[in-house]
Length: 318
Length: 290
Image 1 (cartoon, each protein chain N blue to C red):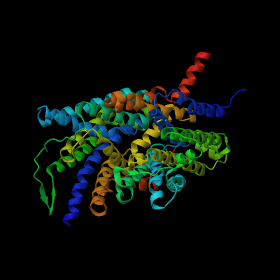
Image 2: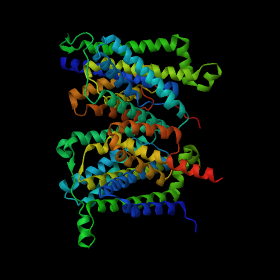
Image 3: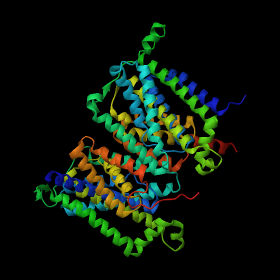
Image 4: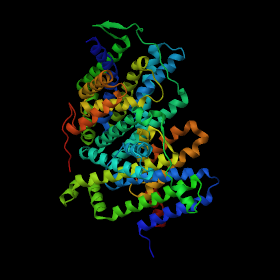
């Protein structure tokens, strides 16, 4: 039996989540893994926006910020359960993406990049400046999700690191599954069509403006959920989550691995999440190495790492 | 009234730096269609290298010259090593390359010069001048004059010299320029050198007022970019006007609205410009060929 690309991607992800813990030398690695999966979720959203629909966003961390601060603020101020706060954050992000996306998705290329960048920076500025609500740049505590305690009463006793590792891993698989379904759906095909050529897509009856907006809203929800999960697992969040550098990181992860495929983008997320861990010995050089990696990959592996690897393997087979 | 004048003075001072950044953006954008997010790092390098050379005991004018020359060389190196090999890459890739370059330069500067905030003496003393009830630092006049002189020099260069016209021709149509014998590769190199030098000049002039550190570049880049976009991408006149306008809007926001949100002003302006007049104040209306 041959696996479809969709089944193959999900299988690889499931194996990754299930099997890597056997190789963890210490509990700390569960944390790194959970972080990787959270970044994977955000980056899957970028795949939908950039890989499928061909639109750029340099401000998606803004939505992560909204998701994160929804989990920090809604439980204390609105009395909402943290799980519902994730939903609230996602809904807020979706509405905001819809409102902002309508005017700015008419723009292309650099202009779209800068408009989204401006949006992201405004969000992070609000989080930094509204001290009464957000506690400013010092960051704010985030309540416990409570799910681990619930699992414990059911007899499933996980450490905090293990819980978040598997919770984020399962969320990532779910997110990837939804994204892959979207790819194969009529909407996904239309998105890819407008990526190829907007004019051609329009002439065959694709509602270009509506579709771009859909992709933008969906990817905003991914970023928001990723932000929420980050806040909940750290139990603490600072406005950096919405910062310019975080937006750039998201796009870089996606493009580094290969923005055209979910698995590629997640590979990129993995590399950029692990890079600082590997480089702790050379902490002083971390920034330089990160910058250099970004430049070199874009010059030499334009489609991203994963497609280039596949190409190399296929090239040898012939 | 004197309060307003004071805000206008401080707006013109920062606006002049933004205008220099915007002019640098414009030169590279015209020559290569690349929006160089590392433009702010040239500004940072201008300030940091001048500080370093001055701290080593060199006289200030010599230190400034060294800073501009070194930054220009780095600009050329960036073009040769990062931009030229990526010719024809999609916009996302180019954005990531220039941001990568920016992070790389920041990391390198931090490694060589450290994380501290630095400054060096103002060129003509620190005694503020009184004008109409408000005060202005002599260094502010240096910055503003710098922006105007660079603009006029660029205007003369682009309209009165053969080389400048070659740059414009390359900006209009690279292939056609090549066909009439223009060395477009040299034009690219020249554009990066010029743009980096202008950025460094801005950073060097502003550092006595704004101070400098390894991480000040990105702020200048974004504001300068806002200026270039407000004025209309690709138009030097627009870059100059847009840069000054962003500075003024920022200073007035800080004075009358909220000093916390002064940095937001530039981005609100960008979003409004993009919504309502994407071609900016002086830009040409662009049409896409299918």
